[in-house]
Length: 217
Image 1 (cartoon, rainbow, N blue to C red):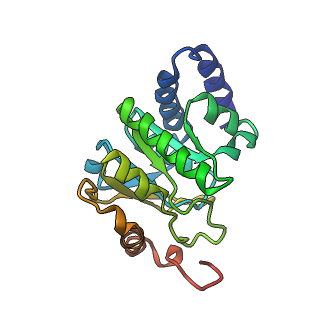
Image 2: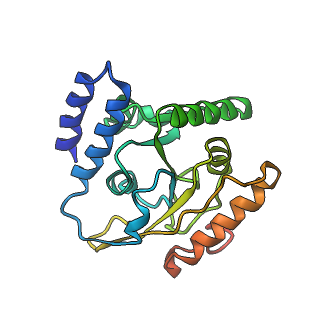
């Protein structure tokens, strides 16, 4: 990982004048980093759709897995503080992925709008972790509303990616669920949509990763 990160950092510097070429190189970086891991993929026919891809977040390696599995031209979205993550954070910024300012509600709303405009203007797909943070227990956390706001503003379908990735020497399983159409969604029902997608997602997780006790949630 260190070797590939260093190599792609050099490539990103060479591509500084071309911001969305850096997005595509970021996708290729994910492809190279995850090589060598045994992976079972289900529903791969849904992996080439232009969409908002959502994924559960149980490991620091999740980002490499979804960058490998999603179409070239897929941009990530994360909190702005990611820039302080050693090496990876700087590469994330160099790859021109999107960041959200969560310091207050006004800044967060405007950040989501800017992200939606970038996705529409540049004909991109989007990766987002709807839990908003990494689950320390491995169990699915409640979803934030950002992915629904992005769906409403872009009109893109939502494709859930269910992964069993944990930091352990075991095969990985990724399942793409059928795209969820959002072009007819009602902005007054955001909470319903969040709960609906969360429930759907939960049903496809192994029991060890489903929402558990109040402490887990």
